[in-house]
Length: 503
Picture 1 (tube, helix red, strand yellow):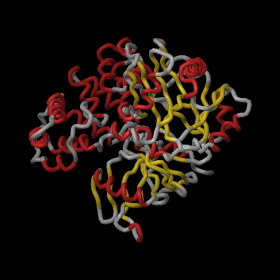
Picture 2 (tube, one colour):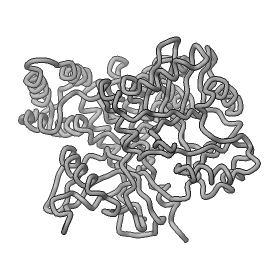
Picture 3 (spheres, one colour):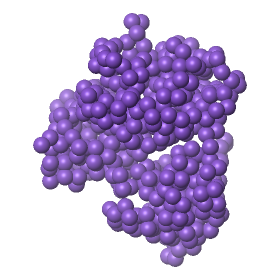
């Protein structure tokens, strides 16, 4: 398959807002792709090479971009092989080797293909929401139920592998994907509720537990081997030795636990989120001096040879309490006084509560209505699109943020507002340096960036407005914090922003 076919499909995806049309484009390309090139084609169209990061940034790519070819000739497999060679380059002379391979690759690419490769390798094609459309495209191309594709993807975490299985073996091949110790699955997510009473009314019999301002973790233990991942499936095992030791001491041989971890003050209150996240980048030597992390587990997905993904929460809770003991997230099953649990969480310095349907299975990777979060302060996770240079005491700093909501149909983030409120001097300095590292273009007042940073915004709802493409504008938006534990695929959608509009 020619790279030109993938580039043409990418352009067709960008040209339409229709989810059905996007699905049709993807299904057509998948059907036409040879088996040996299917995985790479899927990876390219979902915005990331099969190798992940290849060690070449914007400046490297800009420096090696020669005159384009006049006719398309590059194949998908040739591009994949070249990127593999770049990713594997290391040691003395590796920078030159990467430049040589990339220069030769770009020299064989047409102008449109060069543009596509440049955006692919700099992260500008990484619209994570396109994963959902790709799942539907795989289902349409193979005739298997979309839920079967979605489940296989959530268990494998790899869309290219999921697509290859569906195309080669249909539903039977997809059913072979299981929870495997040592291979993380995408976490189940919660949706917001207006109030605790509303959440309890919607769900019926439920668990009500603290919602902490920590970092999501998934822990796998197989005998003495323990591994730990973040919510984005980044492995952090070597940075969190105290969590590894704790899980290794639990009364079991094998387990998969879902939970939160955070650093606490001496009086047991949560330290700022950034302090918890800073541990994930610590070296082994720094761990001795770093703040200790405390885990709170709220779900058990496997215990001693038994997979519990499809078991109801009430059954998973029994397993959780048997294995995690004092490290279970505070809360109660069908509490007599749920408001007291909410008050206790807020009083301890946490965000609120989660209300979870006792009869629900674990929907890996889904943000459904089986888990509902109740927080007194309304917040949204949005994507930074650009920033404007500041004035007055903020002169020389990138300050006013342009904020975008996720397009659920796989398009680029949709701008919904701006804010400079809540930015500390420390954040101003950090984002000024970081935005210039990921910038895509600029004018006299504004630096535009790759849509890869997620920021949590506090707001007083939204209002209908023709000022921004989504038809809504944020009211009194204020920056709470950046969310390095989230990627753009986990940002709130434009529908979530519209849901905050006050009548």
